[in-house]
Length: 232
Image (tube, rainbow, N blue to C red; front, side):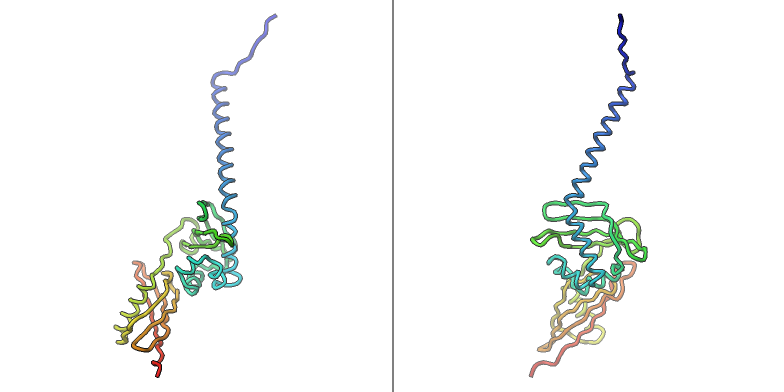
């Protein structure tokens, strides 16, 4: 009696090996994606909680919810102006297609969806402390853009703002200030900073507003100082 052993052609065996390799790679890729999403899940909740608070309770409430570093880098007024410029009051959801976490820091990149159908590309950095994940910084693309991060929103240092306002007031109204202290402010049209100015023994508030940003990136700033009379 003879026994016939069927064998697969060499080409068939090669394809089986290729398919097995692709299968293993697909499993590994899926596992990697699952791991990233698992580790960044709490950071995502932190970012979306911040945006939800901003939309429902207002920018001031969201600003208070952010990290101390965020609060030190921009004023509540500056964040409110930036929020308005991006239409975040209409926040409807977010999709984060790029996520990374390293220790107690996380970065999320994706798109914020607005109730009117608009889409805002954004990148948010968060830090983790004892109370959970908190927003540390935001970078927005152009409102309404559907892809890409666009140009980051810059911050103007408080010292620079103070110096510019001193020059503006001296040139426009011959009003010489001895000193001024300002917080940093977002380089966004409509952003506002409340400063303190001094002249001799008088001191008072100085309101700074970003009036316009031209195509070359030049920023027009308006400064109004209201100094009280010196104490008698």
